[in-house]
Structure formats: C-alpha cells, structure tokens
Length: 78
Length: 355
Image (tube, rainbow over all chains, first blue to last red; front, side, top):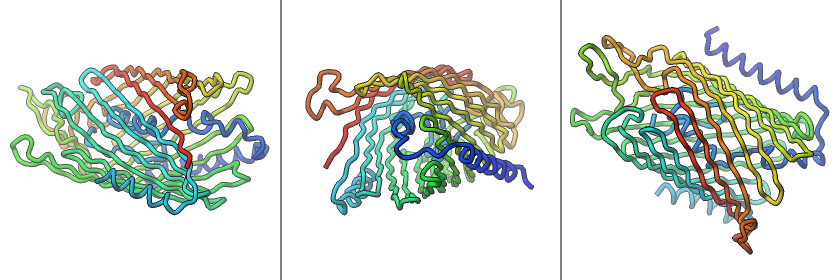
C-alpha cells in the first residue's frame, strides 16, 4: 500500500477507534445535563472572522496547514 | 459584484422565512512583522433561516504592504488589495445536517474560488457527531508582464476531504478529532519569489513540485471547571506532506468567565516544522526544484495571546447598543525564520439581530 494511503487509512482508523472508544467508555450525557456544554467557550471560543484571519496568516507563514476541516490558502500571498 | 452576490443570496434565503435571528460582526485585524503589514477589515453575518437553517456570510478586504512582492525578501515596497467574500448554508434535518458554501478571493494578479459540501450525523442522542467535508478549489494567477520580460501565469487545483468526530465525555468535557487530506495540483510557485544560485550569486525563479499531498490530524479536549467558571482547551495537530514537511502544533487556551458577559482568554501555541526536502537558503548550481521560501525552512513559532470580551452595557452604553459585544485581541508571535517576530491585533463588535 502506498505511504499516503497508509496514512489516510491509519488516520481514519484512529478516528473511528477514538470515537467508538470514547462513546463506549462514557455514560450518555442527557440533554438537560448540557448547560455548560452549550456555553460559547465550550463550543467555539473563536469567532469565524478571528479564526479565518488566523488561519490565513498562518497559511502564508507556515509550511503546515489544515486540521480545521476547512480549505486554506486561496490567495497569492504564499 | 461579489459582495452583491453574498447579500442577494442571504436575502433570498431569508425572505422565505417567517422569522430570523442572528448576529452581525464587524472586525478589524492588523498583523505586523519586520517587512510585512496586513490590515483587514471584515464583516460576518450569521442568520437563522426558519427553524432549521443557518446561513453564514462574510466579506473582507485585505490590504497587504510588504518590502517586496515575495514577502520575506528584501526589495522595493509594494501594496496590494485583496477582496474576499463567501457564504455557507447548513440545514438541520434532525439527525442529519447538510449544507454547502463558496468562497471567492480576488487580487489584481490572483483569483481563487472554492466550493464546499458539508454533512453531519448525530448519534447516541447527539453525544457523538460525525462530520464530513468535501471542498474543491481553483486558483488562477497572471502577473500581467509586471517584469517586462514576458507574462507569467499559472493555475492550481485543490481538493480537500475532511472527517471529524466530536464526542461528549461528560457534562463538563467534550473531545474532538479532525483529519484533513488535501491534494494540490498545478503551479504552486510564488510568481515573484526568486532563489539565490551560483557563484557569483545570481537569481533564478522558484521551482517547486506541481503535486502536494497534505495530511493534518487535529485532536482537542475542552473541559469546564464549574466552581471557577473556567474553560480549558487543549489541542494538538500533527501535519505531514510529501514535500517532507512535518509539523507539531500543541496549543493551550484558558477562558475565564467573569460574569455579566465579561470574559478573558489566555493562549499559548507552539509550532515546529521540518524543512521541505528541496529547500536551501542558497543553491550552488541550478536544480530542478529550488526554493528559499522561509515558510518551507526548518523553524519554530511560539504564540502568546490575550483576548477580552465585554458587552458595551458594561461600559455605560444603554439600550440596544448596549447589547453589542466588544472583543479586543492581541497576539505576540515569535518566529525563528527570516520573517522575524510578529504582532497581531483585532478589535471586533458583535451586534445581535432579532427580526
């Protein structure tokens, strides 16, 4: 198997194990127990504009990109 | 014209609904390092569309002033303006959420367009959320014969696949993992960047591979400390690509809720990467692949930042204007490469909408 494909398969497998493992090992959190989980600091402490500016600045200053689930780049400032 | 497209899309979706709530955010961002300065005013809108839809739209202007057109190198100062707009819509079908969006960026010598599809499924009474994103982008650039030695132009295509899992671990802890796979094809050189070559020293055009496969795996845990109303966020990203760049990025953030809408955040981020396998500061002889781009060198970055939020009512503003939430953010970035240290600052005002 080619190395990039091995990395892809390993990453997906790791995520599946993490998700299933975490889910299986925890008591289910009921909706009425989610008061603190719905706080903005527990969902996203960065506003869209803040994170977009930061991602863009890093994309033009760092060789690495990604991990946000969103496409980076998109400008000639590389 | 692009801004008009965003507004028309937003109004078209909202006009079919009986009610909508949301918020509008005005933000000014500033970035300064040794030879580059960026000013970026932007506006973001987030609107509920009916009972099950959510629309996001943004427009920004990027004013870049740099010592040279290939930032990080010495030369005559230049100034360029970039415009970007985008919108996305996500519809809630109960267990599933589906949506899509676009992003369009234009500069005098560069145009970039992205389309995105996004899907999520909730499991175990929404304790687990699995998400997937597919994005495709097309970039085109043309220097318009700026050098007088003939026009340089190129095209680049980007395809992104992303998977994410979010898991509630307790009423106070949530964890998430995201994996991004990005496949970039086409001309990835900077049109203006040149590479020092030979003895006596001359300059040649940058040349990098026309394929790049990029992997990024990010994991994070958020926990809320109830007695002190403190949120702690720990994250780590591992990145590697087939240019042999590898990077580690741990990050920690602490958000303190002081009550009454006042909050503060402290953050620390560490970033370290290896150099691309063909990177050199100076080449003895011409090579098929050559770059002296500082961001493809081996270096590390440390970021320390502070951010504070407060509603304007806490500053004595009354009535509806008092509901506006203000944010002030300052980051100091220590970079061990040719870019040098940087400072970033942002000021934002978020206005709730009810209609």
